[in-house]
Image (cartoon, rainbow, N blue to C red; front, side):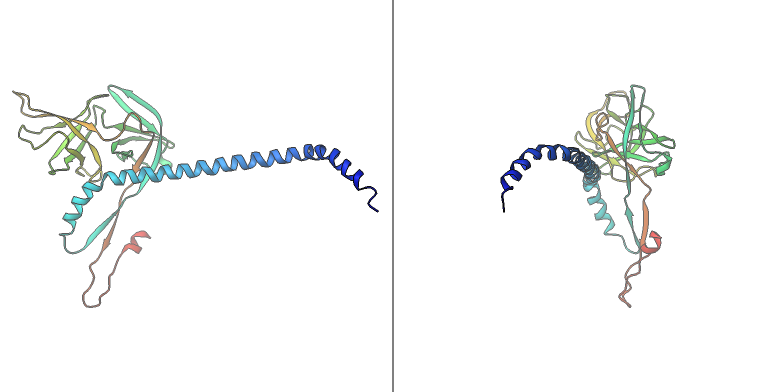
Length: 265
């Protein structure tokens, strides 16, 4: 008969705050769960994007050296190989920048197959190499450490030399280059690949000073490291490259045989 509709409306209005308070814990619980889930997803996505950006930055730095290398490779005949670059992203744990002892510790060790002598890079160039490996961490010596030396070449003309560290805040020095060496301020230096430890073509630094002191047999050439040694937080560990042989296409059968599948297995 609709006699109790107004009464029901009044009671609903009175009961509504109680219903709202009763549902409040569940609403808060759902909000907190969604908030932390969103935060976790954003953090994972951000980490993934940072790693991708870091890898792309390193590859971009190698374009000039790779362009020259590709010109030489096109002249080769017969079987060729493809170098597959693999890297592992690590993060700095501690830093020891003593003027006579410049090393850092990263959060990757034996569990990730890190090995002594493994090259370490950041987004702009070579930082150093691994000198000690532990189960959960590794120690890396930086380019500027006085005990460190790295084979390099001038990207402009291919002139080879050795870049040694001279301590914190000091430029790298090119060793044993005569006064008539074709080195200019602004020349880019990349790894030469000699010694088999650092891959070819990674940026090492830029020449910032060239002096030819009288009475000395060799020139004094200062190099500014390409890597951001004092600010980089994430680094890349270069893993051993995989060599994949590719045979030439047979003109008779017009088929191409590759051993890539076997190499992958």
